[in-house]
Amino acid sequence: MSSEPTGTNIEGTAPDAEHVVETDEATITDDAELERTIGLSGGLAIGIGTMIGAGIFVFPGLAGAEVGAAAAASFGVGGVIALLVALPTSELATAMPKSGGGYYFISRGLGTLAGTVIGLSLWLGLVFATAFYLVGLGFYALDGLALVGITVGSSPETIVSGIAVVAGIGFTVLNVTGTENAAKLQNGIVALLLSMLLAFLAFGMADALGFVDAGTPPGEARDVWAIGPIMSVAALVFTSYLGFAQVATVAGEMKSPGRNLPLAMIGSVVIVTAMYVLTIFVATSVFTQDALAAAGETAMVEIGRALLGTPGALVIIVGGLLATMSSANASILSTSRAIYGVSKDALLPRWASRINLKYGTPHVALGMAGGPVIVLAATRQVQLLAEVASFLHLIMYGLMCVALVAIRRDEPDWYDPDFTVPGGPVIPVIGAVASFGLIAFMDPFSIVVGIGVIGATAGWYFYYARDIRLKGAL
Figure 1: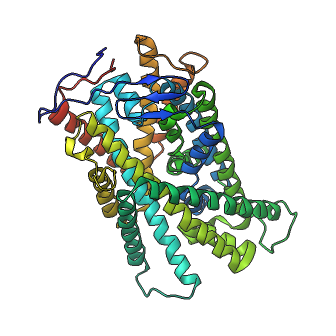
Figure 2: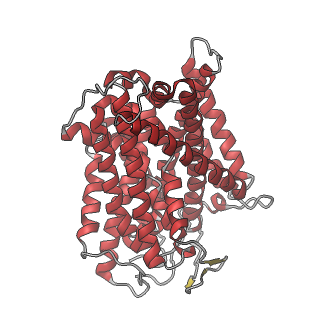
Figure 3: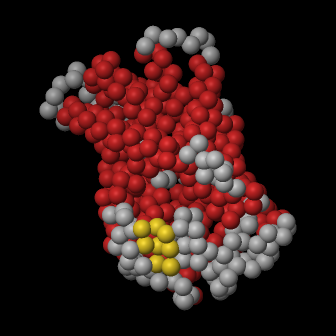
């Protein structure tokens, strides 16, 4: 194991060597002192806020159209896989409280090649996810225009692309001008969104269970309770869980991380999974499978209209716009930080981590996030974008579990986690198998695109950074 980084990339640049000191009150690095101010409730808020987003508004129509009420099982499968990865992630995060998250854990546990592949794949995976959120935003904005009586002519698809592209540019500029502005927008959106969702789900459940009568038809969805279709839909909707690992990025600022970090990650996954399952239950109680398929990405709008009339549709449209904006904004921010971390390790050119002197933000990294997002958003390929994002994240989650097993096996001196996953290697191994296994149920073209991205990132390592060995890598 290397105690300090060694080697340089083809430009002669060496990785930054950062030293970390942890106390009960703070995590101290070369650049900053992070006070431990985040408790369990704060960790839960981060986990829920990063997961409750576009997925709950865009997927019910797409998933319900495939398997009907069985889509609830698909969301359940996604939640179980997220839980299996959350525990190993908690152990790794309490031992390595770094903002790089999955990239940092894998690069130190499995070496520079795996780290480069995952670091760059995380960047591109978030790019695909952000483009998916922006296309969803475009569809919801289109429904909003229709609700207020504005017609868009015979090319609504072009309008969707235009809205997605403009929104992508807007969120990139917002993040360049200051993280504080983006964070304030994010917190406000999440609070309002949760209030609206809880009220909508309470009324929908009351209608589905017969406590109130909103005049909706009884549940007539044709349910497909078969393993293959359920797992295929689980692979599609797994994008909805991509945010849970973000809690790990604040491990260095969390009080009693050995207790609060795993509880926050597990609690947020359980709460969000319950909300997803309830949403599918309400959706398939109101509409048939065919009706969900016809409504597509904005089926939730028609469900809101069926339950509460025009005010219900308006609430869902506003909620959908807030959710897609929240997810897109958070993903662009995360994408830029992934690029920043990889660049600091000299796996990308150092100019990618330059900080804007006026706003104090990584403006080059934000540009590298926003540029490809805008291009992909213009394609409107919702399912492809979602599945490729899931593919790249599932690879990362599986390798994080493998990294934990490898680090435990080698027992390096620097590895001293505050939380240890019980049961030895059982949970990490099952988590890795489940993460990699879900990929087999994806559309073959999505798998080909994902493999192409992995291959390109591996090629970049051998071209640019094969002589680098990172600090702490086994």
